[in-house]
Length: 340
Image 1 (cartoon, rainbow, N blue to C red):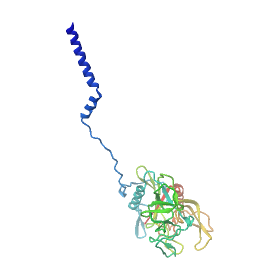
Image 2 (image 1 turned 180 degrees about the horizontal axis):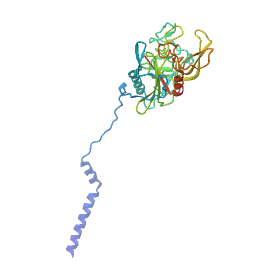
Image 3 (image 1 turned 180 degrees about the vertical axis):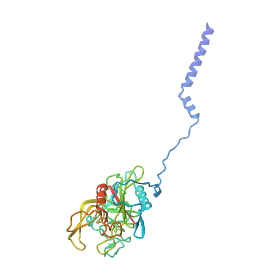
Image 4 (image 1 turned 90 degrees about the vertical axis):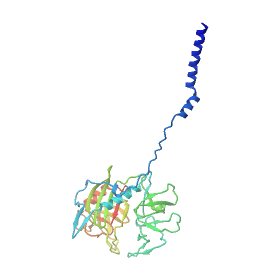
């Protein structure tokens, strides 16, 4: 009997010993330390590569088809075309300009309503006798651009309507900005800045070609950009003292008028109106065929469209196309791209 009890005690002791070893936290930690460790995979997102013209996809699906032009077409003894490659380059710039939590703004000083810009450090006068900066941008209706470290006097002028990125969230008197139509980073007095809706996406773009005298509209889609219209146009001519070229750049549609009344040259008398007008810089509008007094009926088309520059700075269109743009391109949500 004693032998049997001793044998049972030995078996019980062995079981207890094994159980202790299996549940011993020190033992488990030691075993884990000895176990082979799988290497940690650190996933780092590579910064997105800037887009190029080759990354931009254009698809033609016209929403407005009157008076439409082909990609290339004859004009007198030459061939004109829509400069799709150049347009793609500009669209890539616009897409690369955007970033998370971006604060867009538009430079504004239409008719010097925000106050005439101070003199730049280096200025001269053009053939219109107006003060210009070293790049030829006029002081009138423009915004002063100051060096980031010196606000004693501006270096350049920024055109009214230019799209910019605000680089600071504070409310100081001088606002740091970066533009699309001009290089570098600058500071601008608050009064000349109109902030746009936060994280706005510019899905509607009007492209004006002053070289080929044509105009197209583009709408952003999930796959790229859809061409909505392709039409003849007439841009501003160089004819001092009243008519000026339509300036190149990337501008915001700032306002629109069903009728834009204009003065007869050199007077303060109303000479007529242009229908369905969308303003983008200074006094430059995209509008329909001008209607001179005493007439009141809207004119649909002119054979001068798509020929040579002949307006004062505006972009003339067939009136129904101007109406399409008027309805389609919402102010402060759409861009005008002027190329040469």
